[in-house]
Length: 136
Image (spheres, rainbow, N blue to C red):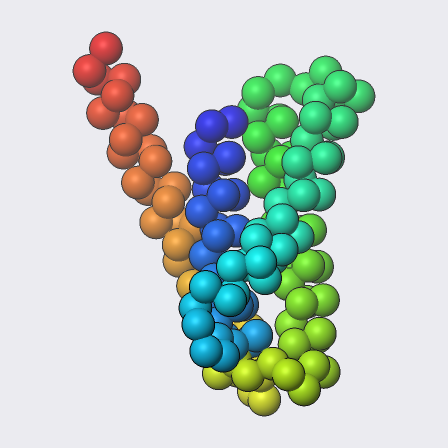
């Protein structure tokens, strides 16, 4: 479950930064994007933070099935939140991101980045866990 939580946090943070830069845009000061990035991060994770404990309470799930449910829940809710945020950025005339006018390319690029990062995290976390087990 720890590896799933690490993956979700890192992927959500990367998605938040990407959406903040690529679709919302940075106007004058990068620190101005802080509240928006926090909002994006929470939009990606809040539903999973609510659903995972409820699922565990309701089904008395073991660690493996809870981890599977948690990641799938995050993937679905983060995708829905991303679609809403991208649609809002597309219609907001104040957005100044690089992909504001070319949503398809920006979305495909974000999907490729998230998938590649997800697999890199899986490999890195497995490697770290196997080294940790060998050290014991």
